[in-house]
Length: 237
Image 1 (cartoon, one colour):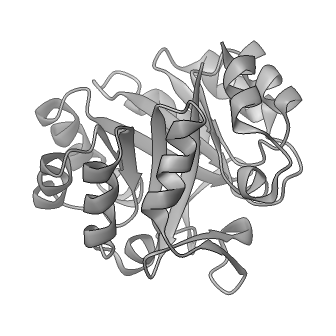
Image 2: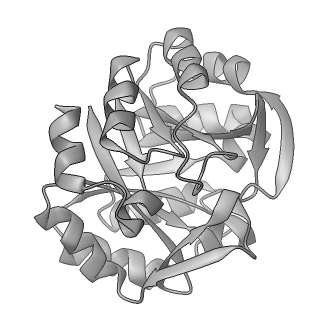
């Protein structure tokens, strides 16, 4: 199982939003490139990057910082947040990103997402963020009215690299992941499922691995020190 340490970008800095709320922000570091190198030196080979400004505005904002991270670190980087058209997908992949995450636009325009999945085969990740079983969009600011499991099954036939499932109620709370919902998703689709939100301890990593997830994204817990990245990587093997 892959461990993907997370960097959430807002105004060029590393931050975390509590339960996705923009007025509940914790700022950790001013230099995301240095933070990415810390993760790499600890053994991580993947980096999960989110442009929070982009998720809120609907277009990519922190492009300069994203470009620096890709060019100055040897990690495989996936990016989400504000990527909602073909040109931006191409632009981000051209920067050297390994994968691009689509959420809001994929939910709103599934036919378009299907076309993009085939055009950029194996390079797109479907980001499904939910409160309960109801999907959210636009940086978690609005409910999408779609069912998590049903939508995942609808997308499962497309050549996407993975599905990232985030339980919004767990994100940034350091209270453990939603194992039951993650298990449901793993069992419902054949494509890799990456768990996000609430992974707080090495035991959480082991539990996520045990239910068949292909990866776990870890954010605030790394910054707060409740989980050691090296130990998490060992537990995921």
